[in-house]
Length: 146
Image 1: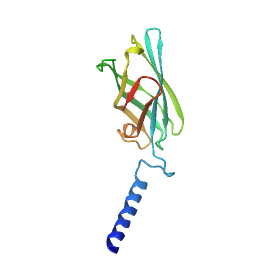
Image 2: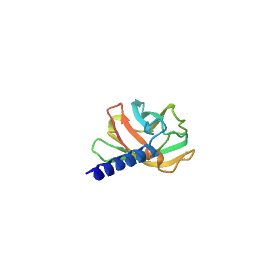
Image 3: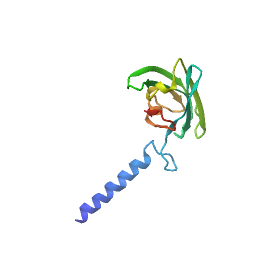
Image 4: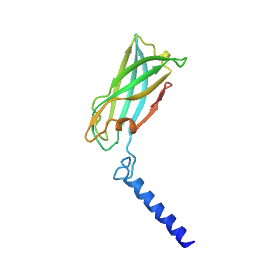
C-alpha cells in the first residue's frame, strides 16, 4: 500500500509541475488569454456597427491580428464571410475596435463565429496562438462563438 500511495503522490507532483510549466500559465499562475467581447451592435444608417473590446493577457504583445469572421442570419444560414483587422494589441491594455458592415441590418445578424486567424503576428507568437488563447463573449443579444 505504501508504494501505491507514494506512486500516486509522485504522479500528482509531476502533473502539478507540468501544469505550472505549461505555456498557458504566466509567472503569476494566471492563465494567458486573449479576451474578445462583442460589446455593442449599433445600426448606423445602412450599416451595422460591431464594437469589440479586446484585452490581451497572453504575456506577449500582438503586432497584428486579423480574424476570419462568419456572420449568420436569424435562420442559421451564413450571410457573410469577412476579415476583421484588430491591428496591434499591446500586452495588458484593453483596446476597442469597431467594424461597419455596409448594407447590413443589425437585426439580421443573429450569430458571429470567429472561424480562425488570417494573421497573428507578434513577439514569439506562432500562427495559432491568437486562436488558442481566444476567449469570446457577448455583452449584447448577438451570440458570438470561437
